[in-house]
Image (cartoon, rainbow over the protein chains, first blue to last red):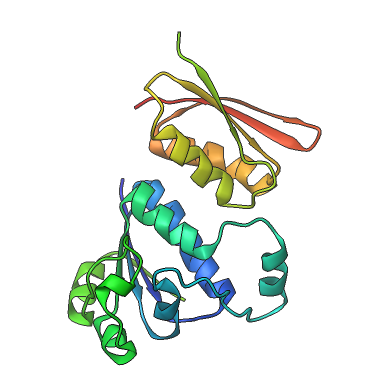
Length: 129
Length: 76
């Protein structure tokens, strides 16, 4: 029984990116149909080679940095590569940021508009971070 | 005779051990037995749950000196 899971990620805070990556990866490798929509402050971190750490929102985020938890970007990549999650940048965020497809990580799909995202999400679970 | 594959994910936090297991499982043959080593308590209960959900066989779990050993067989 496969669920449909749609995840909207707008935050640039480490804890939120981490939790979104955890849900995307575990959902995708468990046979759920996962779509991730990256927008606002989140998109920047998905540029190729963007290595700077996302700022923590609170104490847990600081603690996370000192532990050997998988990096959030690695989690999204695992979701795409091990579980066939579809990860798309929001077309509006792509335009505002002025980012080209070639500048984004190779496992990120084409920009997606809200109409398409909303119709894909219809009838499934929607998570937002 | 299928080979026994050990995946050492000690020190990694959830869902690191699960992801390491799945990455290795992709290249294993149906019937292969794997054992994942994890120091993360959450993974020790969540990995068997994942195996049950996707249909691989849990062969057993044991804890030894703070390390969880989860043995499984690839079924598909």
